[in-house]
Length: 323
Ligand code: NAP
Image (tube, rainbow, N blue to C red):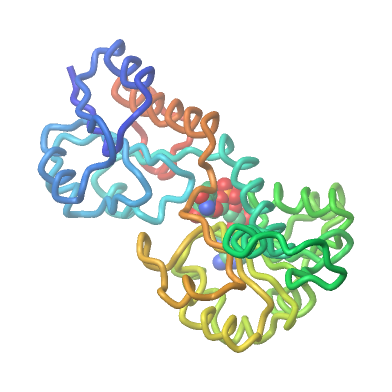
């Protein structure tokens, strides 16, 4: 019998699946484990199912000498020291694909909310009532349809966002590490170097993973290249944007608005962002639908069961390690 530690409350059917596979499961009844709790409880674990807010580094690996697999409940694995896992021969898995459309939906909802000032309008209506229909109301926004969308990072989620843009009759530019000629042909997308994308787009949506290359990819200089009427949407990872520079740009009116699902120092939110009206904020809920969270849990649990049974799991992030 192997012990599997899950750092978060979990759907009962997935706990049952692990037990049915013969594993002992250590899982909090609600909420999630603190780092101290994770370190204290991982000692005997052979499987670890963790959250993107869990930093899984050498300290965790040292505390877990029996660990055979780490399954991250998310597609981004910037919280995991992959080099350390690989050095120790520990396979790491993630949960791609099942969250792609759900995350793109949230990105689109944020983009629409910022463009049409939905959150501001809702807040004003609740606080001040509906003063009656006016021709030039205080919440005049900007059009989405027919304008230019720039997607930074044309992977699974970026492509799903680009498709939504095409559905809104938009010109869609993209910037990515490698050129995607098939997507250009099939979806009518245009490749652009980052500077050109920032200069020409009305909406810039970030969908790159967080890596050393993408940390602060969008800083003061990049924000200054955007249109004054431009809107920045971040559904990638907080540190992809220099938050202090973004606050400055929003305050100065260098860009029209921003919509953020992710923050540079989660769960902290820059206090100035909270004061600004031209920002829409959500607490990292990109993949947060019932169906998608269940699908993510199913994938992660499946990976742990596979590795502990000596099988190669789906979605292996460090394929150099052969379980
Ligand atoms: P993906 O399919 O791997 O796509 C990432 C894309 O970014 C790839 O096309 C990649 O290019 C490109 N890229 C990587 N480094 C780059 C760089 N330095 N410059 C330009 N482009 C670069 O991943 P995904 O499934 O779409 O997920 C993307 C990210 O979204 C995740 O890593 C995660 O951080 C974030 N996410 C957030 C939420 C949320 O709740 N807000 C939910 C899910 C995911 P190549 O194709 O050339 O490799």
